[in-house]
Every structure is written in structure tokens, then in C-alpha cells.
Image (tube, rainbow, N blue to C red):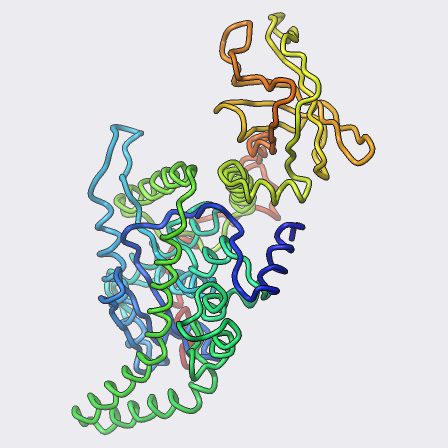
Length: 502
């Protein structure tokens, strides 16, 4: 945590009110997001209990698994959820722009869940569904593996910094507001909302106390409260099982209705709170560079949609060694780009990075605007030098490539030297790009004496990692010979289910 971030949390604690961390909302918020609130029984790993899903506050659909340990009911639940999710996703697979390789869908789906646990639940659901067979002794509806493959794509995309196709609402709120509680506590949606927008008539302290009481404010999932499970849910499921064993249709309908009503009481408060959080986030202006990241989401969505249209196999269970390393490199690069975009757009984020020594700003005290150098190709090009005097605690090394939010678009530079002088730092910077094609830099493209400028690392300055070909890796890092069984339906399909009973 940087100095400014820590200060914002202290201010929030002193004032007992959330403090804005950013000037903009750096995540795209769709005009028609699909909200999914998944619930699972406490202690039943991977056993879905219910989900509430919908694209508007007043049209949520509640799906319930009356007996979470029953395989048929679990996959009936997955099929019901799959039909809703696929109808939503397919509504974005209509309008395309461009031709050939540049053709892509003009919009992407966006799924919002209450907290990171919701993302993990969708990841588990995707992994369990995408390998299901639609024929044979354990056949499931065709929408089940289709849902699994799409959920896996969305979860994989959610791991990439800056993507907005699958987001936890608590993450978006904590990205913009600082509270007086820990990062772990910020994953509690009710507690986080108590700091940002406590209910009318309640103080933040009172709202936080209510958030910690599962009877007043049920957990946002994915697990239910153990007290609720033991006191209310277990008897309701037992009544359902007894009615099912008796074969009395009326008793079964009554037991199922009671169970749905019980679960609705647990999930509806979170549903209302998520939509309240969405309204709060809409009031924050979107960052300018969010549009560029949205285009990246559109390209990824189009690529996977086209891949699905070819009758593609499910994603692998595990990456190969080279695939995992390549993906890690992509995630690191995406994180660097997202952090740079945030600082470029947002003066609050830039100040935060300056306090951590990851960027700097100051006044130009020396300048050589007419400096020329000879390149390796024996041509003369302009390479002006400027020296910036800053009081920021700088941790950037020489040759670090830089970009500047205070200079025209395309401005590029690199650190030549960093010298401490008393309580200040003199940073000599060489301008390398954004000056036009002429031998004399265009007016305004080189900082002038007395000008205040800011710089931060260019996310593209790190070289792209080079990986060996798959057939050039040692046997310890290679996949076994033969067909790729990782992408196929497991042989023991029945053993791959949610908490399957013996």
C-alpha cells in the first residue's frame, strides 16, 4: 500500500465515511449487465444451492436446487442457468463491424457477481459443466457444456487486468473508494456498502454492525451462513426429501415452495444491494482509456465466439508448461498496461504512483531542445534532453522508457540519469518519440524550461518473453504422447460432479 492509499484509509477511518481513491471509474459498466448471485451450501464444496440472475433489478429469476446432493437436480439447475446466460450472450452475437480479420462484434456481454467468491463459483461451475457428455448414461442437456465453456472463457478473461466482461462488484467499489477496513473485509458487500452509502437513518457504525449479523444482512455468497444452514435450510431440505419419498404431489409442491421462499429471503437482499452498487458506480465518470480496453474485450469475445462456431472442444483442464508461462506473461503485460492507463487518465492514481516512487513530476530546469544524435544507420535524428527537478521519491532506473500524461499523445522518452541533490532529485530525460518527422521537433512536443511535466513508465518497455517450441521442451515439461485427453470428456464422468455422493 502506498503512502497516499494509506492516508486515504486513515481519513476514511477518522471521518467514518468512504473516501474516493480515483477521479474516474476505470472499468466499463455496460448499459445492460447480467447480474448473477450464486449460492452454495456452507460445507458442501461445489454443490450449487441457488442463483438469482437477471439484467434489471425488477426481473431477477431465482433458480433453486431443492436437494443439492441430487445429480439430476444439479444439472437441471445448470441447464436453467445456461439457457438464461446463453440467451444473454447470444444477444451480443448479432452486430459486427469491419471486414475480414478486422471484423468484430460491436459490444460484449458483462456479467457482474457480488464478490470474488462469485467469480470462483462460476469458475467451478464452468469446469464441472464443460466436460459433460450430451449422450450416453450420464447425458446432460446440450446447453450445459456450452455454458461451461463460456463461463471458463469469461473467468479466464476476468483474470486479465482491465477486462470488464466478468467483474466482482466489491472489486469495482474498492477500486474507487477507500474505507477504514481491511482488504479482506472489503470483500463483504454489505460492509463495503455501509462505508460508501449506509441505509437511510443509520450511521456507518450501525450499518457495519448489521452487515456482520447474518440474520439482518445475509451473506452475499457464495456460501450461506452455517447458522442459517443448521437452523433453517437443513429442516427445509429434509421436509422436501420426506415429501419426495412419500410421493405426495401436494406435499412436494408445498415443501418446494417453502424452500424457495426461504432461499429468496437470503438472496434478495444481496440482489437489491448489487443493483444499488451499480447505480453508485454509474454516478462516477468513466475513464477516457476505458474505451480502448473495451475494444480489447470485443476482440477477445469475437475470437472466442468464432472459435465456438467451429464446434470447438472444451478448454484444457491444465495449461502446458509453455502455455502457462505464455499466459503469465500476457497477464503481467496486461496488468502493467492497465496500471499505466489508470495513472495516465487519473491524477489521483498518478499521485499515488508518485508517492510510491513509480512515477514522478516536477519542473524542467535544464533543456537541450536542439540536440541531435547519429543512429546505427548513420542518420541524424533529434534527441532533446531535459532535466526535471522533482521532490518525489523516485525508484526508476536508467533506460526506463517513459510516457507522459502532461505532453501530447505519442510523446516518448527514457531516463538517462537520476541524481539526488539534497531533498530533491534531478532526472535527466531523453525525448525519443512524438516529435514529428521533421529534423526539428514540432512546437509543444518537447518540454520547455519552467514547464511542469509528469512521467511514468511505459508499460511496453519490457521486452516480450521468448519461449521454446513445445517439441523443444524437456520431457519434464512436455505433455505425454498420444491424443490430448485433457480436452476430452473424462472417462469417469460420474466422478467429476459436484460433491457426488458415493
